[in-house]
Length: 224
Image (cartoon, one colour):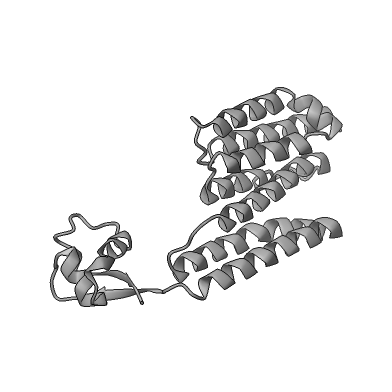
């Protein structure tokens, strides 16, 4: 590894660590404190870890701790994007970037597995984002004829798709509603569902509501 390659690879690794710390974790929690320690230690030793290609295990520990500390799906996807934004074609640099991207994808799937979805649209939006996220890593592995990485990525991708598809089936769809005038939340819930007890559900689907006494004349509601 040349000096220039090591410099770029170290910069990529540190950028990933910074993104992990900003991935939506609860910094005040015990796991958040552990994450800061792990990221700080790896950042301090980044030059040696990259030079010896031993950064993988400590980086994996940072990722799993970030998820335990509350990293969000969107936050972890941003970490993935930071890793895959590395454009240097040198293999030592791409090794750092691609390992980080694969770890991010793995944690994104773990976060999804622990997520409860309210509607099929929520699942569909997540599924679309998953497909976009996996494509660059799968293409890179295929382009490098890295069959081991490609098979692992496609298997993880397929498992996530199956899980989301299965969980979407029993969920209601969100459909638009429209009335001639505004009405109170409880009245609207009763008109739509025949059940004023579903008012909070309706309010959650229309987050731009200014006041529950004046619900929008048009908005969204669960289909059942």
